[in-house]
Image (cartoon, rainbow, N blue to C red):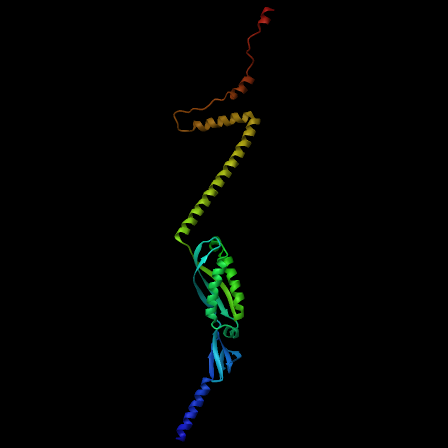
Length: 261
């Protein structure tokens, strides 16, 4: 009986001593509580935790990739969209992550959802579609500031999808088409204006140099002669003969008063 009791005691002592040793990996830390009060943070490696007196809570320090569920958001211009995102964060202070919040994973998830709705609701639809980088930075800054008290560092936030209704997609397509038509009309008007300016300059030059007009007329005749056509009709300006009139000798009839004399 004494041997059995001694053996039992020895086994219990060995099990008790073995239960004191814990091994924590490189990315893990152990928050130790002594009789319910915070004692210290231990790890990584081999640590000793006294059973019944000390309790340990493991904390993972690796970056957590959290998928934020799809949220119904109404933008500032009253457009209903469905948006989901992904949040990258990690624990930098295991003590505060365990003591200051009950479940830091759940708390960060709920905070991410509410922050996503509140921030996107302050922007218009065009900002959600074209200015995602700025929205990501704004959401990340807000989350990082609010989770700092929990010992959590939010490193990045990315908007994944912005889903629109079919009617809104068609409206955006019509808006883009109208914008392209507006640009085409503006470009066409600018081209007409530049062409009119060039024609005005050319007209001013031709007005000061009549010979240039005649040369331009002859060049036009040359271009018409090269065309494959049976009939060619072109105007004959009377001004073209002015040069010949000035060069020809005067052939006016003699005055009657001169003959009588």
